[in-house]
Amino acid sequence: TVTITDNDTPAMSVGDVTVAEDAGTASVAVSIDNPSSVDTVVSITTTDNSATNPDDYTTTTVTATIPAGQTTVDVSIPITDDTTGEPTEDFTVNGTVTSGNTSNTTDSGTVTITDNDTPAMSVGDVTVAEDAGTASVAVSIDNPSSVDTVVSITTTDNSATNPDDYTTTTVTATIPAGQTTVDVS
Figure (cartoon, rainbow, N blue to C red):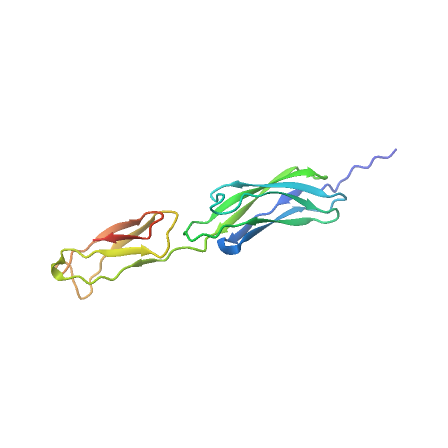
């Protein structure tokens, strides 16, 4: 009897992918590095990191089957498009081999979501009477952010000058997360 041990046992991997928030889905590759003579079945689950379910994506638990003779399949994970400005976020896609012949039984990939709602900041224009005492200037973002927006405000002379017409002002304006405007006096 001659017993032959295989030297081509494939390694399984779960790919990393970066998608825009408005992409609809993230397509994650589940692969083996060389073909197998049998189907390779991988259980896929997602885990929150800075991206969370259901705010940023839909938790997904599926089975991915790489057919014998092939090396990859794609798993689709729904991405949530919102209207809030957010930093880049990510979540983990975990793969566990449940059937097949691989040199490893687990691997993980990362899905990175880039935001499509980054707010634009603006400082408002105001006209005030000289005897008003103060000018209230709106500092705004055009859509809410998931984090505080901190803006450094500094006045500069034009035809009005300091100290004859106004008092030079240097302040920090903080627009709280979820809000769009604050006033600076």
